[in-house]
Image 1 (cartoon, helix red, strand yellow):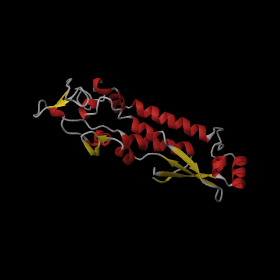
Image 2 (image 1 turned 90 degrees about the horizontal axis):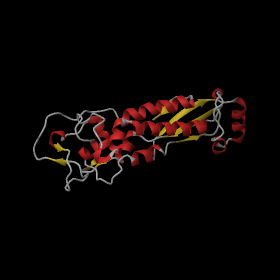
Image 3 (image 1 turned 45 degrees about the vertical axis):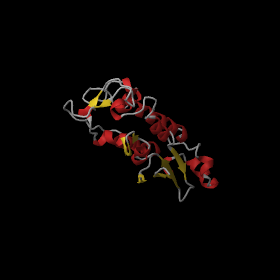
Image 4 (image 1 turned 180 degrees about the vertical axis):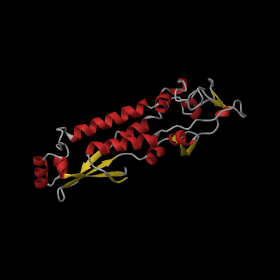
Length: 214
């Protein structure tokens, strides 16, 4: 189950005539697509637009773009000091699409409306947590660890990483030396946790409510 982010939306936030009709119908599914804020915008359509913006933003992140670029990408994120690329350093198979599971989770972001209770509609936004994303982003050689989380906390092995074509390489473009061949270390970078916190705030802003449960 996806974690629920609950917002309590004050009755005055929405058009009075619509709220009154909601109170009479008391059917959350009947009015989910019809909720309109005081600025005249349809909440459902704005929510879907915001979700698309969130996914577009995720796909534009330096780490996301670099990994999506495959084994021949450059280290545009700067995490490896400009050497090689994350795809071959992490050791994905050449045919893998590591970003897809994250996008699929983000695309499931949704909201539900409660029945009207004392003039208040509770909007529950279902959105992936960082922990859920970490579970669908296992390291190829250590399934209990998440490559997405390692972008934030660091990865070892950069000193033994060789960015070169090899039939022995999972990615076809990176192998690990038995000894250190260079100095330097992996540069930790804000990624999933920071990304999600930013977009939680955007969904709060859209609803006009406040988080009561994450």
